[in-house]
Amino acid sequence: KFVLGTIAATRLNIPWFHQLIGGWKEELADSSAWAFSQGVSAVLSNTYAIPFDDIISQSEENEDGSIHGGVNFGYTTTARTPENTMNSENAAAGEECPEVEYMMEENLRKLYQSAHDSGKDQMQIVLQTKPVAASLQSIVWIPFLSRSLVEQRPELRQSFLNLAEELERHEKELGRPITQFEAMKVGGAFAEALAGASMQHFNDKHIWESTLIAQVLVECDEIFSVTDLRTNQVIQGHADGKIRRVSHLVRLENKMETHFPENAARSSAHYVGSWQITDWDDLLDGNLWYL
Image (cartoon, rainbow, N blue to C red; front, side):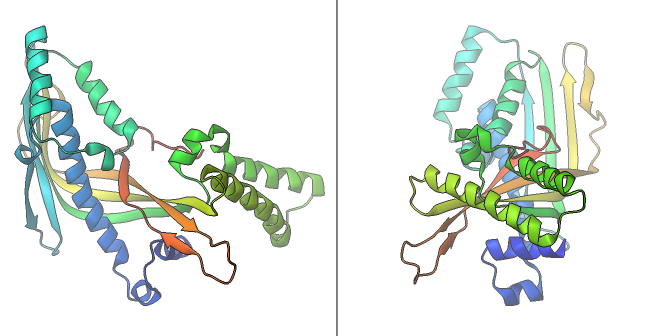
């Protein structure tokens, strides 16, 4: 875990002295909790055509000094008719809804839209949630690969599984456990092939992509219920309106680029991207693209 954290911090361009002092993991977790509130508010704003500012609540300082905004969402659907469907579309076009594609990965956005489109005609949704604490659970660096690269080159999706199988095959051929040197030799050829694929993605411009994947546990004070108005039955959450402490596991990705100069005398440049939420509470089973 220490090694993975050190690699991640290095890829994030965190200075070594900051790594020694610590605190970067807490900062990342706190930022992720803020992003979670923003992301939930944004996807609800876009899905239900409600202004973002009517959903996101003002940021407040928690006991630990962290500052998180919250979500205050209430919505009642009515029987769908051509008239109110057109009104909803007009509202969506006229109100200022955030560009949620920068905050959340496409598959997660589509999941909410699909749930809304196929949901019950008469339903009441209440969601009030405010992050109160957050902790980094894991962070892993995926070298040479990114979601966008795998989407364009699907044959690269199981590259790391293929590497594991190749190492296992070598052990069977040798009839003994593979040595570290032998594993590095196999891994080196594997890394060279992946780096080449990444550079081809950029028309051989000596650029390769990599991805950091973080999982953050966000603790929230929350009220949540979904009620079928036809039967007056609560089909999700709780009907009593009480605040409960709820944990949400938020998964985020950061796509990075490393640029290698054609002149070997010059050093490479590493560019850190923006974090994007790809899943929470395993709604998409992790929304994996590399296995």
